[in-house]
Length: 547
Image (cartoon, rainbow, N blue to C red; front, top):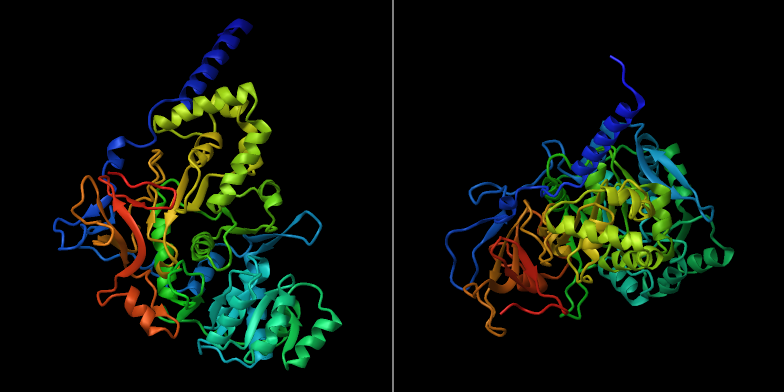
């Protein structure tokens, strides 16, 4: 049967129209009924409290999530799982110093570096594995920092991330509280460490994640009887004299983290997190991603969270455990979009402030265009109908540059539940065509407690239902007049309990008794309300209470 040119053109036109109609469908991504109740809620309310809430997938009679699977029990197991999926898979991408291009390491290459650095660290410092000795991390998120964290887990040492790289008082207090003898430090922060040395008599080994140490810096360290060596030298010495790994147990301490939100106390508190705490948070975050959108070895994470932000640790472990890759950005705000374009991440994790600045920069470049305005308005209409897509007609013609500026492969945006400008989350959902979720948690809860449902596109700025590793309730507060019986929503102090909740505070039993009660509930010191759909809304400084 012969077809003339007109018939072929007509058939092609019908196919294109049908495809565009499908891509611009108005149907929601999930049935609205699935979002009407997002939590498992207890039937009975105790006096002075709200009803207890859990994840919808975790009935009140079921145990909370503790592991992603039977083989992953520690952070060391997380790495082994990723390595087993594919030793030749890409593990990390990092920017070459002042060259503007990325280098790629495979899992096998990084595994060798982890073994080398860990062995070299033990040789340099004289520390013994399986002793839970604290080792400082005073560096931005980087290739060396990641290798060091994995090495500490491999030899059962304790990581002590110090998140503020410009605060000498904080640095001195953390070193002296933990009595640490060794610290990994970025080249940029090295002068501050040397300045603090006279006040830190326990510190004897300083390992620089950089390529240059001046004679003056060597002399300054030597004056205070401290060794000053390059990271690469430590790793090389360990490769020549490898030490047999000493894998941790789930209840061993993985991290002492001083990045706590608690500001009411003048005493700096180190949050003690075990491997079991962090692994349960990883299990819960992975379970929060629905089937069809779960992380795989093809995923790539770019994170702008500081080393001391536990959510960043959880996200990294979630990607590594499935054999995915991690991008280490330059750390400069002006390079955020450049880093994304160069590395093409699929998961983009940033603070609300960074997301706001990305939105401002992209709107400044494209927001005045007529086609952009029409396209963005159409995508917002789709969003209100419960539908997100990166491949509508509007994405091809009016919004293609938005997605391209984020690397072109992004499929999920993750941020914290801190206050964010209205419209910013919707900008990524509609403009880039990807889900954007908030995670609420504290350092004391391993960075997680609730997470926004990936299909919940409503404008209500709630933080989502409880995650599978914990349960949540509200405690009445007489001073503010909040009660679990308030209408239309229960209000009170947010309490969290589960395997993700910390062991306690480092050498500070008094602080523990005030925030971690006898039933294992962590008292966050923050107020919230539980909405009728089972989600938590946290009261921020810019948020008014509903009456």
